[in-house]
Amino acid sequence: MTPDPGLASWLQLALTPGIGPATLQRLLRQFGLPQQALVRTRAELGAFLTPAVLTALDSDAVARAVAQALDWAAQPGHSVITLADETYPPLLLEIPDPPAVLYARGRTELLASPALAIVGSRNATQQGEANAEALGKALSAAGLTIVSGLALGIDAAAHRGGLAGTGSTIAVLGTGIDVVYPSRNAALATEIAGRGLLVSEFPLGTAPAAQNFPRRNRLISGLARGCLVVEAALASGSLITARAAAEQGREVFAIPGSIHSPLAKGCHALIKSGAKLVESAEDVLAELSGFRPSGYASTTRAAPETQDAGLLRHMGHDPVDVDSLCSRAGMSAEQVSSELLRLELDGRVAALPGGLYQRLEKGQRR
Image 1 (tube, rainbow, N blue to C red):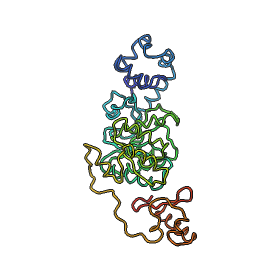
Image 2: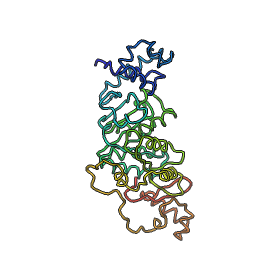
Image 3: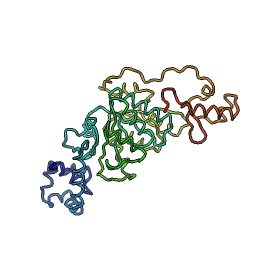
Image 4: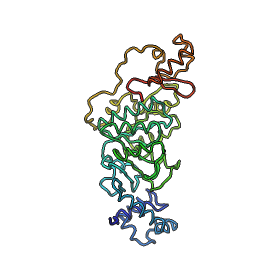
């Protein structure tokens, strides 16, 4: 296949160290498309680029990176999408610093679909993951594409939910698109590449680096009409995504939790700051103006449960320790521990750090 000279020009600028989104946009405003910029004299480009960047622009290293990206893009299911392409996601054009190129693997048509970001803690509770997956599935069934970051915990659960509905899912990576991180999500990444979409703004081969993930977060929110935070501590990276969403004019949603849970404090802070409190998929759908659910006919609110027998009756919905359960239920520690084990094996109770236990709602077991 003959390389596309237009795409090669985009890649040459985007892959040159020292040319970030802001600099590239200045070049485009001054000279037009990258092909037009690159035929300018290096003296003309020197008004925008340092001598070191000008040297890198024509280097063998950049030429090799461009050739590698073109070879990758030529493979089935792979795409490199530029700002000038019709397939470039329209919502990303609204953010202050849209990436010049996006590497994409999978169903690129999802970039034009209405989407919702679902994010949260990597160290999520079992209930939090169940909530993220159930909401992702319900909202995907309503026609929304679920966007998240392929991290462990809430992100992975949201992707699984998105894949279970018609809206599918988009995973925005903080690495090169050919690098799977974390490795425990390799099978999920393969499934998303087949039935959803993987995207990254980072060059091929980019390894995990702490500074790349906060940058990636602006794309998670930027691709979506709103951002739902399921579980998050006060120092969570998910709050960075939520702040980016608010700055981009997107809706921000949060699920409340126990006042005793550190993973609820970030969500509670968002709600205090004006985020919409979410208990069901309908709470999200009602706030997305102009979006009409498709193929969606049932509520996602939990049906009223019949009276629970035994220990569950005394657990409530907050994390609780064995001693408290002994006192509430009038049972010995041996009896409580035995019943907790049975309930855990049955998927009705989750063991939490610190010797605590929490009940799981029916329909949200894993």
